[in-house]
Picture 1: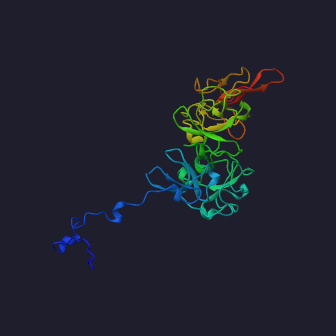
Picture 2 (picture 1 turned 90 degrees about the vertical axis):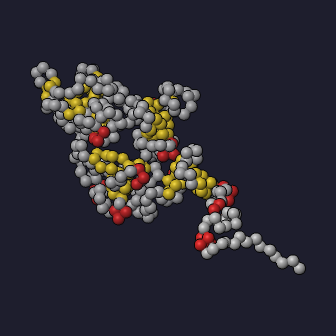
Picture 3 (picture 1 turned 45 degrees about the vertical axis):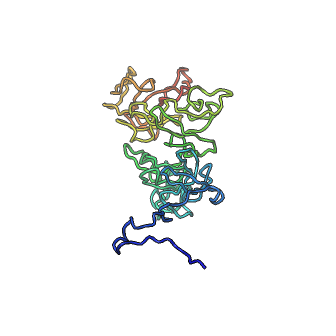
Length: 355
């Protein structure tokens, strides 16, 4: 009976036992690395995907944020495939978290309707805001927010605590990615009206969220319904159309009539909302108090001689509503006509069409 022979490579010394050269020349299982990912071996609803770092694993696929579990966000790979990625922060699901309603009378911080122990405060635009909701307050980046939200810089007030407008004071809050929110992919944009949204390019190469439309009336006052490639106004049979900002940007250079989201976007003025419109634009503070000679009707001010929207320029002699303080240089559009003179009535605004 033949003996069983096993090939053995002997070492010349004990020291050589630790040397890499002292081997049979065959790679050990650990040298081969992990086996390749095979999608057919993934759990149902999962697929082998590279998350953009070269790490290929079985990952849960998605078509929207609604497909992902709690503490996961539907995001896009470099090859444009969607998967649920774990959020940077994990939060316990329960009362008073993302998007839950809150009573603004309870304040911003430590509102009883929001889970302040996890950093959720009550975001409101006034102490009587019926749309107030719980969200992460004082975020540092979009990564601090859940899928469908982004870290927005907003004016400090009005808020749940006060109806008085702040000036050049802001804070950060995780807001739903609605119209004009920054984005990278379509899946980032979720909106709040149940309308499909897209992430489109602005004139600077950045991107912002905007909803689909079929006509101008579907859009905010300062937007146009145009083709998805932004080449023409939407018309019957044009295919997918979106509400693009008329100036083709949601934040501009900070000068008079520049689009803005908060006072932080304006160089020498405030970010205000136009009357009878959803438009937000930058004012410029007049160098002198704005006054009108009641005899001649001449306005005295120190305002810029032009603005980027090429509309007439006015100056507030007193606060205009709750959002525009006195002595602010503003753009002017028209809204309706004076019943006595039948002349168009000027109204604060820049890119809102005359109506």
